[in-house]
Structures are given as structure tokens and as C-alpha cells.
Length: 429
Image (cartoon, rainbow, N blue to C red; front, side, top):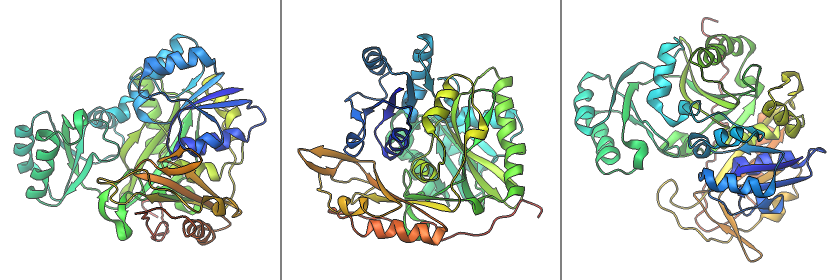
């Protein structure tokens, strides 16, 4: 098999690393890739969100299978363009990708199919409407930008002053671009968050191992939201009773709802959950794998990813093929100074060779590039130091041991990934 992976972050590096282990795989390209991916695949400088450019690349290199990492190509209709040409690709259609591309679309979908979610107070297309809408909310209120905002479009406002400031920045000053032209208000849910991701061929589906992401930039869940500062996976995150509730109340109604709406869905579907006292509720959908959840998930895969994704593209997923290593995995994100605000790139990275010699630890590259023979920073989230272990403490110890060996100017990371683990029970237990 010759495989094309679309994207250039830590998620894509983890996919490339796992795909490369398959005896079925002869060649991997990654577009655009990054400095770390370049050591394991051929990187091609193509804008992953430019559908015409990616189609032209595929026509030239003729991959047997294409796997889409980020959301923008999916929302822009890349899979539709490939399927029109009968090219094998893993990822939902443009219509299905609206589950992530539009928060209003996904909220209306959840309401239409009676899938548990937070109450929506209203959706607004102008700042004036939004300011008026604040009179009807309960505080604190969650404000969501409708479109794609690279993980920065959700804000928890504790009072009208904070809400007004966010609306002004997003809708009047246009700080989030087109993604913030429409916003919605919804009730605040309390509980533990969980990332529940499934893989589906449109008929059959297979859940991946559960993960938990850490969105805030600083320890103790302080500071602004980011694209994700770390994630961990352990089977203890989701006891059997709760897992069955998630599947029966959320996963299957979502897949049935998509079918009923005439929206076939193929690929990865990320369901962001809040585990509340009254049961799990959907916070958001993503139409692809999460980042950094993917790094933690891939580390526990005990199956041939290339074979399984080939089956998905052919409409022949066999869920029994997905087997998982017991124990736990952890990904700790090393970020540039200033992230998620303004940051500088081009900082030399030291210590990666030492990390590669630690058993069970892998540094996945997110924002890096090669300048001559040297790796330098090239993004807000630079590396995802990922480790497996027989237990969560063992995996954490290995991951943080790896982090301690790496250095670049301004580097910062959370020291409390996986530290707030609480045993969970199904509602009513």
C-alpha cells in the first residue's frame, strides 16, 4: 500500500508512525508534514485545506489510500472530491463534517434526535442580537463561535461583562475570523470531560480507547483554552456500565440520526462528553481524531492500522480487529513561550535524541521544521512526549522523564496531566 496522510501536526505524526509499522505499507507521503514526520515519510509542501491542490497531488502520486487528519480539508469537501474519482479515502463528507464545522448545525442535530446535550439559549448572527440575548441566560454561560476556530472558539463567561467582551472581540473585532460570525449561548454543564472517539465505515463502528484531554494552558486547569496541552488514556476512565450508557444513549442515536437525516458518515467521529450527575451529555462533535488524544490512542494500538483503515475506506470495517494494549498511555504537550497567545518560532530544539533512547517513550512532532540539519520550533504546540506504561503513574513517570530531557527557549508544559483522576460511575450507580 502507498498511503497519503493529510496534515502536519502531532496527530498526523502519530498516524504516520503507526502506519509505518504495517507490513502492508510500502510508501507514505504526508502533506504538508513537519520536521519530525520528515524522518518517517516523504513530506510534500501542500496546503492541506486547499482541495484542488491536494487532488492534484493525489493525481500525481496515485496513493492507494488517503487519510485525513485535520478538520479544514473535511469541512472544505476533500473527501467528496476523492470519492467522485473513486479514490479510497478515510473521512466524512463535507455535509457530515458540518457536525464540527458548525456548532449551530450540531446543536440542532442533537436536539432533533433527542441526544443528551446542554440546553441552548439561542444562536445569534449579529452582536446586537447577542448582547440582547444575554438577558435570558443563567450564569455562568458557555459562548461558542459557530465555525472552525482552532480550539479557541469556546468561552465560559461568569458574568455579563466577560460575555460582552468576548462577543465584541469575536463578532465586532473579528478576532476568530469567519468562524466567529455567528455564536450561540448554552448552559454550563458540570462534571468530568471525556473524549470518546469511534471509527465507522457508515454501517459498522468500533470505539477507540477512552481519553481525557487537558484544554487549559496552565496547571490546575487555569488560563485560556488551547488546542490541548496533554491527554491520557486508561480503561479505568470508562467503566463498563458507563461505557454502555454512552453507546446506547449517545453513539448509536448519533449514527441512527445521521442515517435518518440522509447523511452517511465514514471515518473518525470524536464525541466530546461531559459526565454529569444526570448522565453523559454531548459537549461537541469533531469530524476527525483529536489532538493530542490521537497520540495517546495510537500508543495503545495492538493492531495493523493500515489494514483497518483500508477496510473502512472499502466499507468493510471489522470491529474485532481493533485490539488494545492494557495499561495506560500519556501525551504531554511541550508548547512555545506565549502560547496560546503570540509566540516566536525558529527556536532550536535540544534533547530529542536522548528521548528516542527511552523505552516506551516517543516524541511526536507538532510544530517543528528542519532548517538544514537542525530542528527548530514552528508552531504553538511543538512536541507531544508520549509514553505507555503498565499503569497511569508508570506512563506519567516515563512521559515526564522524556520532557525533562528536551529544551527550547520559552518551552512550557503542564506538570499535572492525568493528576485529577477520579473513579467514575454510571449515573444512578
